[in-house]
Picture 1 (tube, rainbow, N blue to C red):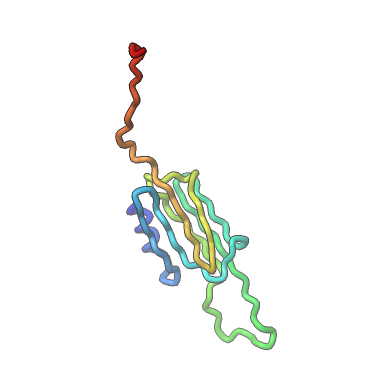
Picture 2 (cartoon, rainbow, N blue to C red; picture 1 turned 135 degrees about the vertical axis):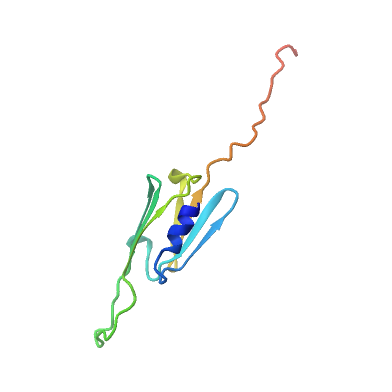
Length: 121
């Protein structure tokens, strides 16, 4: 997971995110202002998380840009934590906030096996 944390730390200072962890999953919360589900492409495969987002700007026709600093595109590729299950990832975007849930592999803890006594009648 440190590779993901390092990669997030190397993003532009204009990209705001939180990375959370529970016993069962990781949660990446990423601000993507103005982005909707239709303008977002998110893939998790081959040990990588790929996020491409864009937003439309519709300035009032009475105005022209003097300076333009709000980015239209976000194109990020991040490493998937080694203990995450890429095929069961889930994502939502609401009001410009992307939440990507990355479930963890089962811990492989102890399993209790029921033993049947076939002599019992």
